[in-house]
Length: 216
Image (tube, rainbow, N blue to C red; front, side, top):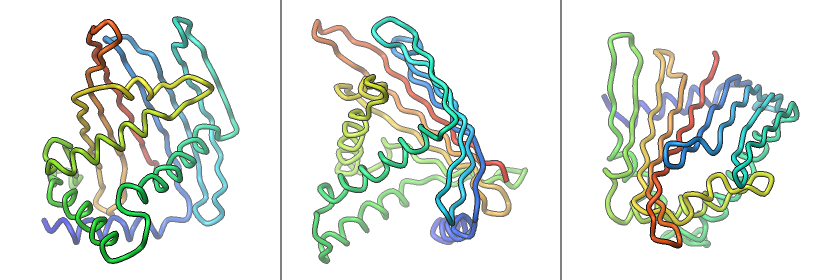
């Protein structure tokens, strides 16, 4: 299957949507103990930007389990803010000026990711696009690592749930997109693994996963 044509069809289909409904689930484990979990049911109007969301989260904060619930779209605004922040960081990674070199740098990243993608067509007509960070060239792996470090600076109510990855080593990411026969994205699945070494030199196993499910 032509990956460029596939991505074009998917992007064109998603771009034509006026509203999206779905659910986000995310978990972070440290040494096989859950330290963060979140579920967010949302509805977003892509024309107006209006978001309706019902979210709940549970965080291990200094040994205490803290639960939060919200109907105000807190988590969706949080992720939207981090997306905007990430775009700002990208200017520093690719070059802040919109010159030819900066554009070529972005093109190199896009082509590297496209080349590393694996496409699988299943019998039920579902198409699975998967990307393993270890399949990227060395310079792209370094770029990925820098982005993960910046993601580790994300904080929620004073607790850095992704901050556990800030000083992690051997970071690895696997991403999968599940696409139906209408070229609609049904599920986005992310898995991140890493090894954290504390001040005493002890290693801690970190695992994070997030699933985004759309309802069409």
